[in-house]
Structures are given as C-alpha cells and as structure tokens.
Length: 70
Image (cartoon, rainbow, N blue to C red; front, side, top):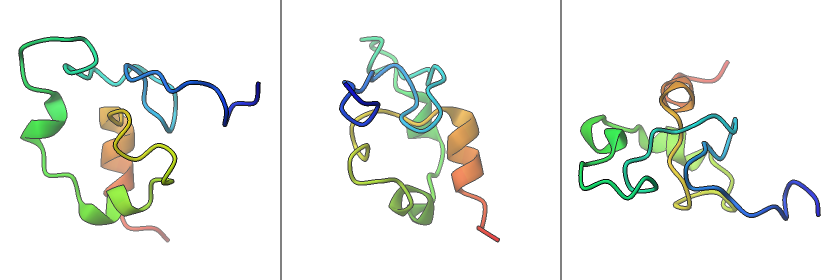
C-alpha cells in the first residue's frame, strides 16, 4: 500500500503527520482548536482535494499555510 492509499488518521495532520489536537477525532465534547481561529481560505485552497475536510491540520501547518507563498 502506498502512502497515498494509506487510510487517513483523523488524529493526525494530513500534511505533516503530527498529532493535530483535534477534539472531534478525540471524541471530546469540547470544540476543536480550529473553531477558535480564523483559517485563511487561501490556506485551505492549497490543500490537496484528497485530504480536504477529512482531518484537521495541526496548528503548525495551519499557521504555515496561512503565510503567503514566495
């Protein structure tokens, strides 16, 4: 099985594989951290379709993706 075919772990960032601290994946009744930050639409648009809306980014990747590309 290739990495692209591996099942996506909702508790891991789909970009870097680090723990994403997702409250939803942890089945917590608390809101997820991403609900309290403004995620730039440009950042989400840069995600591949294969991972979009399947798992939270980790805070590090979310902040990095919000930065302009050079």
